[in-house]
Amino acid sequence: MRKNHLAVLAIAALLLMAAQATAKEASKGIIDRIIDFIKSIIQKITGGSQTTTTTTTTKPPLCSPPYIQVGGDCCKDQNSNGICDKDEVTTTTTTTQATTTTKQTTTRLITTTEPTTTTTTLKIICTDQPYSCGTTVVRLYCYESAIYKQTQIPMCKNPGTPESYCIILQPKASKDRDCPSNCNPKTDPVSCN
Image 1 (cartoon, rainbow, N blue to C red):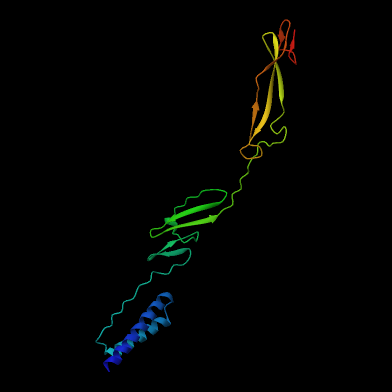
Image 2: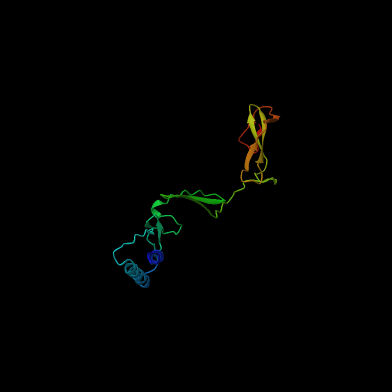
């Protein structure tokens, strides 16, 4: 007869643990009445003189949005990313590929990569097309009693790329002509007197 009581007691204890676990997740009501009923059965079987010790794992409280459960507590998670707002550490790198966000909580490190859209306007200064950096300029100037010609040739480096830029090639000046007396720099174009 004692074995039957122990078997019924074991089954009742299992039912009690299951009902208590369910009660933590459900609202008070019918589950509490079932727990009370099972406890009364255990007391009747044991004659009320024996006590049953059951070990149950206490589940942390359930949290309602925007709060989340971390350990045994609830904390606010306004952006619904699974990290307590107070624990968020955000490092944002803006690139044309993705933003990496690293977040540290007290219990775990979570790294997520979220796609981003970055619009970058690339300016191309020049191309390999003629005159993209300007036209060749020939400048005449006086030096002593002669007229010299200085040529400036615009040229594109790295044409058609965002790294493109214009340079001016300036070969060595050449003597255009000698003046019999003096050169007059005030005339346009420069001329001999």
